[in-house]
Image (tube, rainbow, N blue to C red):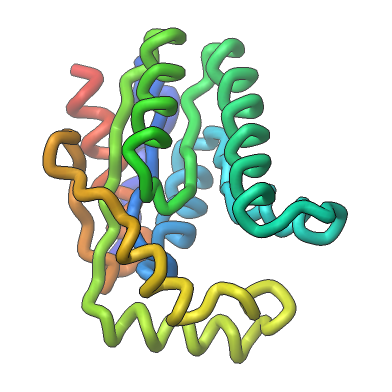
Length: 187
């Protein structure tokens, strides 16, 4: 599918916080990166922060995760204070996390958009196995077991308005769906 590049940041006048949600391995990050390139807006990926923390930190896993979120919120506040739209790439597992992100969006008068990324379990399992095979150093801890652990904790998005994507589609197609949604939300 050819990407419609007429949808650009300049066409989208409002400030947004696009929150990627979904289990590990479903394809959130690929879509988030594609969207950031199309719209030329900052992408804050919690896993990037966590990857740096785990190499320099003596904190346990849960403390590392909390510190990663604290850093993510600080970066988010800075970007929003500069009146930039932002894409936040995290599983968005917990209600406290969603509420915190929504509070930041509200404080800076940015429109929050939650994007739920889903695919069949067997697709996610294959993606996880492939990325571990291709880059064991980065993905060694992002296993199917981690996917299943997060699945048990994932709070339903029932009360949250969200855009739902089938990540079996091409990431470019899904990124364009989000961009079109932002364009229509801004109208």
